[in-house]
Length: 169
Length: 226
Ligand SMILES: [Zn+2]
Image (tube, rainbow over all chains, first blue to last red; front, side):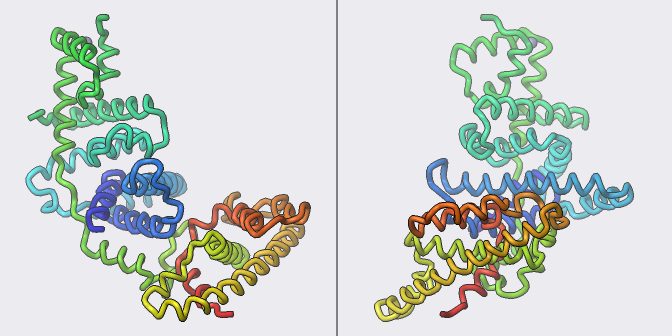
């Protein structure tokens, strides 16, 4: 239970970049999983893959909703949201030694389109195989490959612009 | 085949994830080795991917686990479920649509019984099984009959309502929240063969609602005693 919670929380956090939203969304995921357990069939992938799909769908819903909200908001309100987002980021001590990098990665991730962002988060932060990502996103194998690749290249480009060049070791 | 820089860029992630077959891998490496443009790209991307893999997962706040446990054990569901609904769902709970939700719950209960999914066993498991089982079975049959009747009654109401106000969808609702009128009139056109047919109708009628139900409603319905 705690393991699942941590995994889903991290997925939500990395996608939204907001600790508070990640918390609410994680709770929503488990509520939905709890209510739709009956629709779970162990045909495609395992239970974890299914929970990931539920999460992913919620994240996309959330993204669309908040984008719509942003469009109707006034400029001041948008600025306020950004301020709140930044202030509700996790405490620095949560990042331990690699803190700086984690924050920079998070900022760069936020600039990716949602399609590329989810592909990179699922692959490199959740450690899913290509096949599993294919099942979660319900897109062909070629699309998964190309999204992971474009997402990583774009992320690398953004990090380079920020002056971040992690060594491969 | 000799690789171009575009080929290399397209297959970069497969290379880093060691998904390229040996020959392609060798060709990839051969190009990168002698290409001043691709080499730094591969190195930088390798570094970024490595850094991503080494990121330490964040610990969710302990209260989150508590909230989830509370929520899924139904302890909190009984009080104030409306307050905890996501904001976008609130306008859905106008009286008319709430009735749709009630129907959905009943359809679910009816279906689960018809399919032999005995939600009653969960509550009975800890009690005196053989004694209570017969009583529960009878109660379920009654409840089933009532559920079907209730669903049919509501269907009539919905048909009436949609005829009365054909061109004015309620504000703030999305199309899938209302069952189309032609579907609701379908059952009267052909004879019903058995319960399963009817359940399917109900399910289709209420599709789109079943997954967004507040658990509080299920609880309160569960207490209806024949
Ligand atoms: Zn090249």
